[in-house]
Every structure is written in structure tokens, then in C-alpha cells.
Amino acid sequence: MTSASQVDTKPRPGAEEAASILDRVLGRACDARVWAHQSAAVRIGMAGVWLLLLVHEFWRRERIWGPDAPWSWRLAEHSLERSHAFSVLRWSGGQLWFEVFYLLSAAVAVALLLGWRTRTTSLLFLVSVLSLDHRNENVLNAGDTIFRITAVYLVFTRCAQVWSLDARRRGRATARGDDRTGVVLWAVCGLVLAWATLLALLTGGWALLLWGCWAGQALWRGVRGRAGVRRTLELIGHLLHNGAVAMMMIQLCLLYASAGWYKIQGAPWQDGTAVYWSAGLDWLEPYPSLSHALSSHALTVLALTYATVLVQVAFPFSLLDRRVKNVLLALLFAEHIGIGLLLGLPYFSLSMIAADLVFLPTGFLVAVGERAAGLRRRLSGDGRPAPDAWGAEAGPAARTEEGDGLTPSSRASC
Image (cartoon, rainbow, N blue to C red; front, side, top):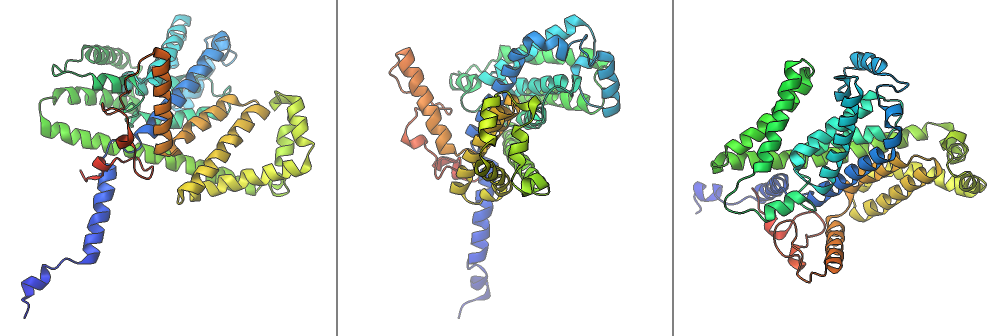
């Protein structure tokens, strides 16, 4: 007969399956390489679009955000007092302050685009976006909302694991481990925070957030020799990274779903004429001949109207199937390009496309990176294999399985 203890020690299939699922979930949540390429693509896209906006509006910057703009500094200050929004431009109404801040915003966008010191530049990028947007909320056209949302989530991601100067610097790190540039940057940021806090320019929740990020950097540098504490902080960083990317996806799904369901309630979208009326707006008609050619075909207008609603409503559900998701994602890209061309909203369209890059398959992004690396080698005349983000030579072994962002070695639970 079998004893009771022997019966109790028999493995139960349900428990093993639950443990396996838990291991996989924890393995993905604690793996920094999950969504590494997606977060890098969003970082490059959003920083590039923001830089393009700053350069394009450089000659009109004073009329839009400057002290002598129609929406004056006093009006902006009164609006910020009521909304409790954050803007560094509220600290001073002087011309010099505005000019220095505008140039620094462009420099931060370049640094984030290149992936230089992203733990600092991503936070400065958020400050830049919020400050200019809240200085005059009447000039941008819905793209500012996407900039704000994405900039918040980028702060919590490790968006420089690939395609960045940070990744190259980590790959060339030596045993000495000194980082003088990082220490100087951290010290300068601390002095600026102390100056703003002592003058009561920085108060409330934003003071806690910025000082918390600054203290977090100090803690990370202070535990350099303590492997256990450093490992714990690494796991927390991985969880924040993956959680922020997941929240970015959820936010976009909610955006598309709400936009689609609101459209369904409108009569022009129900009778299939919404695209016709949108293309006929004089103040949103950069190419009148193109808009008129589109609106003159009733069947095309009907198809585009219904397709827009269908794609937006169906996109969140398409995440259950990778192939369907990729098809709808391509249709969303085409929709945003059409909005940018027909309605003259290029920065809204580009910001949406940059945010949607988070849904691209890892295999596709890896292939794009390898193509770009190959092109760079041909242009530079260097025949050596280009290193990937992890310091190894790129090749078939670096490919991920089923486009899920995990290499075979990263599937082990942390």
C-alpha cells in the first residue's frame, strides 16, 4: 500500500501548470529586455517629432510661447493658477529665460533622440513638453496630449537599451567603473532643484517627484559595491520599465476605443459622410485639390468613414491575435498619414505614429536595426559585424522567439 506521505508528494498537474505560468509571468516582468526595442523606437520617434516641432516653430517661437505672445505671460500665469499645471516658463517672464529654455529644450530632444543619459534627459524632456504646452494650450492640435502622455511613461522606461549612446557606452565600459559625466550632470541638476526649491518656484507634488528622481540616482550610485541591494533596485527598475510600456499600450487602446465609440454616436459617421465634411473645412485644407478629389467620390468617402470607425474600435481586440494586430496597425499608420496630409495636422499624425511604434513586433524592429547597422557599415567602409545592444555580435542567435521580445536565455525566471 502507498503511504499518505507518498501520496501527498505526488505532483499535481494543475499546480505544475500554475507554477509554470507564474514563472513565465515573473520572467517577463523582471526581464529588462522585454519591449526594449519598442521603447527605444518610441523614444526616438517622440524625441524626433518634438525636435522637428521646435525647429519648425523656431522663427515663430516668441509669438507662440514668448513673453510678448498674444497669450501673454500674465494670462498664462492666471491659467496655470487655476489648473495647477506645471510649467518652468512660469518661473520668469523674461526674454532671456525663454530663449535659454527653448534652446535647452531642443538640446534635450537631441540628447534623448541619440539616447544620451536617458535617465536624466527623459525627465528633462517631460519638463520641456509640459512647460511649453502649458505656457499656451491654444496653439497645438491634440498632438500635445500624446506628447504629454508618452513623455510621462518614457521617464519610467529603460528606453536606451538599444539604439543609443548609453548602450554603446555600457558596451565599452571598463573595470574602473568611473562616470564623471554622470556625476557632473547629477550635481548640476541638484543645484538647479535646490535653487528652484529655495525660491519657492518648485513646490508640491512636482518637487517631490523631481527630488525623488534625483535621490534615486544618488541611491543607485551609492550602492555600487553592494550586489544584493543593487540587484533589488535592478528588479524594481525592470518592473517599472515593463509596467510603463504596458500602460502606454493600455492608454493607446483606450484612446482608440473611446475615439471609435464616440464616432459611432455621431450622425455623420453613421451615414458615412464624416470624411466628406472633414475634407471640406477651409481652415484644415492644406491641399484643396487633393481634398476635393477625395470628397468627389462618394463611395471612397463612405468606405473611408466606416473603415476609420471599424479600425479604431477593433484595434484593442486585435491584440489577441498578432497577425490581425499588425494589419490594423498598418491601417492606423495609413490613417494618420492621411490626416496629416488632408487636414494639415502633421505633428498630431507624427506623434500618434511615434506612439504606435510600441505595438511593432520585436522581430521587425530587430531586422530594421540590423539593416540600419549594415547601411552604416557600408557608408563607413567598416566590414566588421556591428554589435547589438547586449555587446555581442549580431547574428541569428540574437533573434527573438515568436516576436515576443525574449531571447532563449532570458526566459528563465528572475
